[in-house]
Amino acid sequence: MSLLALSITWLGFTPNLVTSLSVVGQHERHESSPTAETSRRGRDLGRVLTFVDAVVAIAMTLLVLPLVDVASALQDGDPVTQLLRDHTAQLGGFALSFGIIARFWFAQHRVLRNVVVQDPVVTGLLLMWLMLVVFLPFPTALAATAGSQPATKVLYIGTMLLASTLLALMSMRVGSTPAIRDSAHRPDPTPSWTTTAMLALALLLSLLVPAAGYYPVLLLLLSAPLDRAWHRLRRS
Image (cartoon, rainbow, N blue to C red; front, side):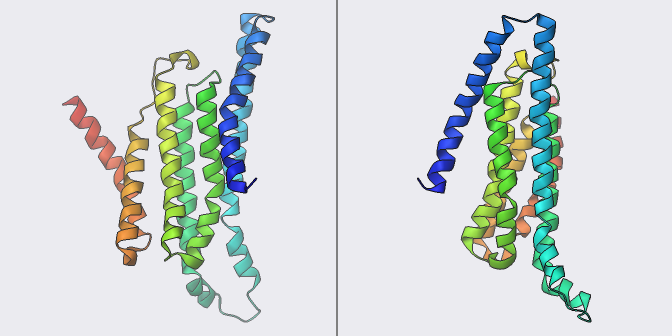
């Protein structure tokens, strides 16, 4: 079985696995008091979110490893300024991807802030989102060495686009499932959908206008103003 087929099989199996775990939890619920059950589910969710935070931190750390290799190749007496000029693309890719992952992590935190009970759909979406975050250092490295190739642009920006889409779907699921929240507050999926739209436009522009490189990704800077304008329009 190829790695691609294996990954697709795993993604299809993940929701079933999460559902099975939930069924086990339901059997355990009959054997424990409501207070103990609430505490257990809180601990389970806490472990999942701690795992997610740790993996995201590792993914962000991996971004710098190619730069460490570059620095290790510097010989005594070689000008550092020349090294920085020669590897501007790698430095830029590191900064951009670091900022994107940080943005995604904060968005994920906002979406799950009021979630207190594990939900199979949310957990499945979260794991797929996490896989994309872990994958991002790979196209980041490609962007520094083969950034002009359309396939690299699709991998790099497309990975971000899919991750943002999953965040939007998570937000919608949490908002439509009050039983897993501890408050009536529902996360707003608009910021994630706006980010998704900006990334889709950035990918299209980078493919249609090759000279633009990865600058269209900076369209993400318009996400916040567009969100505010949308909310003002809805209130008016």
